Length: 321
Image (cartoon, rainbow, N blue to C red):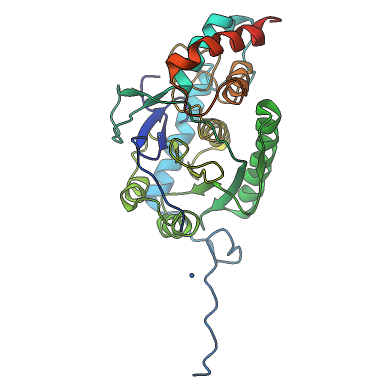
């Protein structure tokens, strides 16, 4: 489909994504508390499970209806595949190397605007410290959905850790924050970001609160400039999504937040492609993630420096295919 699916953003650059559904320029984020009884601290949206769940607004209902129709239409067209690719999606070492270069060394919408057709060459920027996913939910998200989403994220974290051989887990002291929130959860979104990333730019929060409906989900990360162990990310997943689109958003944004920050129309089989063909991580994408955390590639490398190494790694990964 020739439309925006997601937005990937890194501390300063915006990256629009594919099938279900980014901002990277060069900003640095710094890290950031009579006898009357002390006031009790307010609970965050996802901690206050006893709060009365209000009926969704008209805006939220309209978004939910739109995304449900969209998912139904994509499925009817044979898109949003979950098979990981097959005989119809063959690729070789050269395809893999070229796709990795396009996805790991370029950033879409690097100007920080929501405009299509802009890319910037970037230096290599995987996480160097451990990745700890933490889920946060708006008051609009039912308890059963929260339980299911946490289980999905925990399982996916284990898969990403296995594929990358990098420490990826789900933890209560996260540095990769996943916000599952609806159009009605603006106050919770503000409060959560203020708590988990106090230096996060206010202008970007306002953008998160006013996303057009064709941006399904997004991720912001500071990996290009953060010191090792100080990496952070925030992914926003619209709570209005039906189950498969929600799963697709989680798969892509969490993987893109690890350092695969671009999409390529030539990548197949892949979720890093705007054609909506695949909803979940493919066999090709797992190889991209292996390459992303291969010790032969160093954070900060230019594409020129990395190209011979990329070629060698891709050849090794596809030799038995």
